[in-house]
Length: 489
Image (cartoon, helix red, strand yellow):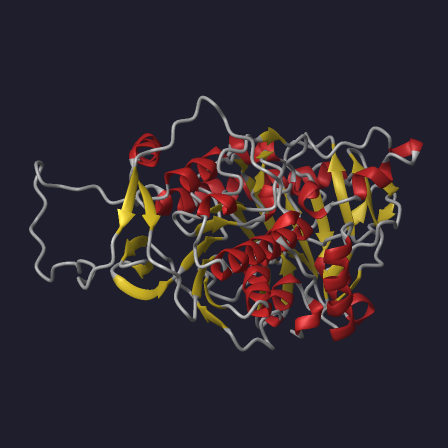
């Protein structure tokens, strides 16, 4: 990506802190330069007994994670910053990628660690099923633009052919099949070949960004003035500063014993709603009570199990689509909560139950007689609990969080709200703040503290539509027929 494609930020973009009188920071732990190496795991570890058994961060209870979070000592780096600083970014979604790109613009190299098996992107997930050539955007469905800084970036993507405006019919579908179109303003944008290809292409022209995936960073260890990152005992590099660009229980476990209690405390405040995604392909266009479905996307109202539905085939391929119709359906947050199971280990009985229930919800929303919805030729369900379509229910309303003593920061869409634009702005803001800090060589660190004590506020709507709709709500208010439109269940 050309450097000119990224808008500039400065520390003044960040919100000032408001100190809480009741908060007492933990006792700092000073990191002293040493020639010793971090302890390596023993090749012949002692067999755990009831007395010496130590519970790892993974598999611990929520209560034990909370206890570790609030009792750990604060890391305090005292050594100067390296002449050629290197930042480790954990998470390769929009926020993490834009953080890396913005750091490169400031002359700072970075390494992005991402867990994605199929590609980067986080919420920008696209699944392609071969050999049927089925395609699904199974997290973020589209995005809008309301900020001039993000607008410059989107203009560059349009010029490069990475995104385009979604011209398809989108509206609200009420129980029984009543469809009301949404206004076309603000414009809705989508990745030309899906959301994930957009994410993968963002780093195509970089020279100072390294990507490691799939990789699950499991430990953060401060030593000798640097952060040492590892994956299940395997060293993954040393870094002058680190960025946490993901969230949920995985991030909480990572931070529970990191030596970053202030960062961990803020991350732990985040509350996420669970969302079920159903990917289903149908041989023919879906019917409606009064004919065939003509819309490409719809926010569903009045159905417990479904809040959004979109025809990926028409959205991404348009008139060129002559194969099966690939639909993405999202549940409501309430339905996700009622049917919550481990994200990485969904029982087959639960998966079948959710699929059946959501298809019945689609049938009801379309105004079809019970049992008349065509059977899909392909289907798959996925529960999003800490990434993908999982959405925040609260936010601190700031671009980023940074702990200058621990040289660690957080970025992500949830800090400003819940959409791709917020993710991009958060990543850029943190990158520029870290670059300013590195240029200061760590002097006067207190001046760079951001968001460590910021209180969270509730977000009114937290179904999937809210993530896609930055700015659409204000447009809806201008139309009387849509005045009752609600994104929350």
